Length: 213
Ligand code: ADP
Ligand code: ADP
Image (cartoon, rainbow, N blue to C red; front, side, top):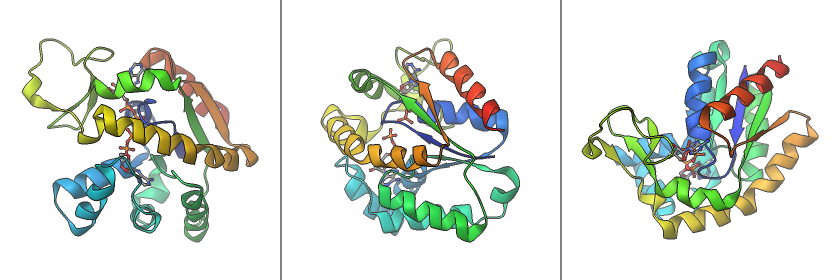
């Protein structure tokens, strides 16, 4: 099964992606995670990406399209299927993805569109914490780690600072609408109400995926 998950920053894409991957065994392809790994390793691409990410801007399409194409061409994808998370984020990326999938003989089965009230996103992003060892995402209030936890084991993302968050939301709201339209025309979008408990959102996603088969 080949899926795409969409939604504004903080909509819950990463949180739901982890659950989808666990249940359906698809490969998780998150451009944000790929950029953060490259930044941590200080690769040439990571240094370039950082100069955009720290300002809340998008990394240029040619860089982003390149890393996704490389990943989709790896041998596990045809077997397991994939879940793209955080890509495409511009209409040009959506067209590039169409071309890449065609060239690789792959097809999208569905687009999971998590809809949230933008007013709730700053609160979600400012409380987001990530476990240093596993990369698992939590929230200080809405989804705290189980039991007593040591704050030193978690980090907050540089780009989750309120000034950057506002810029990210503006950029993503402006770029997102034509992408969803593109997939609506293909009749493969499932809209999911994202302002619910994490497990309730996932239950709706499971239903949507079942209806795709
Ligand atoms: P979130 O969904 O919380 O905004 P991501 O982890 O998906 O976060 O992305 C973090 C940052 O990485 C984005 O703000 C952007 O700078 C960069 N990025 C991620 N995916 C893309 C993409 N498809 N195109 C361009 N830049 C991207
Ligand atoms: P995205 O990948 O779309 O940027 P995340 O999955 O990282 O979003 O979620 C952003 C923050 O909001 C995280 O701290 C996460 O724990 C929290 N969160 C995710 N889903 C929900 C939800 N349904 N209700 C409340 N908080 C949530």
